[in-house]
Length: 300
Image: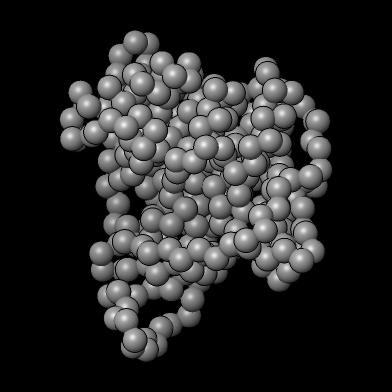
């Protein structure tokens, strides 16, 4: 099968701290951890590591960080034929302060004001496509050109381009924040409130809806029955990229004929394991580790 992920790619620089910095003070830290990031880019990296024939399409600067991103993707056997390195454009940077004690993170993002969009038309045929809402026009073109493909959106944050792409996919895999921001409904922790949110998304977009709930797992509807699918307990140290890794795993499992429930369960496990290491790319677990942790090594 041929896979494509299209959307955002940036470079992450992570600093680990035991307490949040106090304003107007200096803090000496150990070695920082840096690697590529971005929802669609991280998903492509996982799919490449897990043996898929995957391409990533997006835009970075023709600079030090853009070239590092290209090298990283290629090291994971991801095709970069549609990764554009643009002159006079700065690759987006994310500076991440990861609190080891509270396992929280604070992210400062630097993005060129003149945002560049994909300009190379991709009229190839794909079996599986994951979009993250960053490249609306190109994503729409590709999704419409691949109506028979398995089509997934990583709806992490609420923005018009993401909303506009939701009707074009088979699987709307969204964060709780996206779900609440879009529906304008409230969530009080009960399944009843989640059902109302899920109904609104399903009625508006007419696709299979999965709402991710971070370390709690995810929520969906299977064969007419609403189901909460829990995650596993781990000792988390850094949650950076965990959502991206969940979506990459979801793309892998749903396209390898796993049931929706098993796909969600295994994606929960993948995302949870990733939080036990620092750095989004460095925390992608192997497929065998995920299946061993799930107790289902024989279902690959």
